[in-house]
Image (cartoon, rainbow, N blue to C red; front, side, top):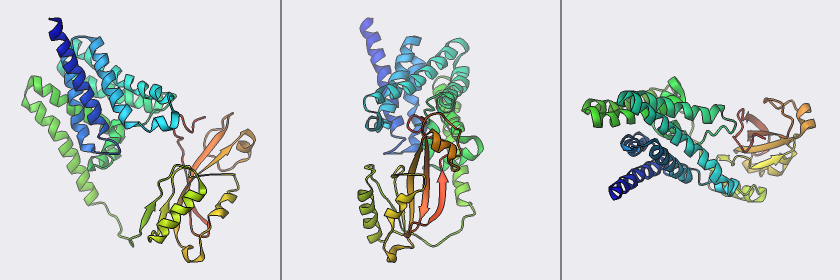
Length: 332
């Protein structure tokens, strides 16, 4: 009997692990967003078959841990060993949503569990961790997986949280259909098909203007070394790039931005456009004097994170300021 229970437990944990892997494939570098509409099915089936809340919590935590470990692997480069703690927190949120769903399933039945509780708890917790929790952990929200999918167009109606809700509801319908009949499975499949069709039609009929084609180069370098970045930019220009996009935080500048003088291009390249990611760090005194800041005043150091559009002569043609700082990194 114990051997049978152990095998069942291992099979359910394997399903959770599979969901974690499938979810990670929905995000970079693979970015197979369509998979999101199927990725939750192994996890939901495991939760449906689990016999205890403790087992459900383990299933949800494992799925979340695998998902975020793969998707947010770059955290380790930024935060070192602390990254594992940051990754465990959202994994526990997935565990919590699954526990709440299971409690609803046990008390009110399969319809209330998968068609109401699952999408409400998943989306509600995703919203809380992204918008209301002090860390504002926005990364890898389920709705973001549709960035390369026409379904993203529905975000104009209900935002990315609405997309997350519909993905979970679609999976919930299919799980319900396994127990209650084919009509729920058909409904779960029709959801993404309808949303994809609506989004695709919207993209096709978008009233855009066809302009003159331009060659764009993106510089991929996180060294924050001006010489390296300038060398890569020169290579891009030699290859015919008209617009060069630098990384975020590519250069750190003082408030008067005199550092831009170091970035002048030869006369033949003065019409090249460059989008430069830049940062200015202000202390208390600088903060009070600066007229460029649009955020709330803080007692500690405040960071301006913005993008500049400049030409070869380093004339500033435009500027975009990030209004919402990156959680943890920029929120001092």
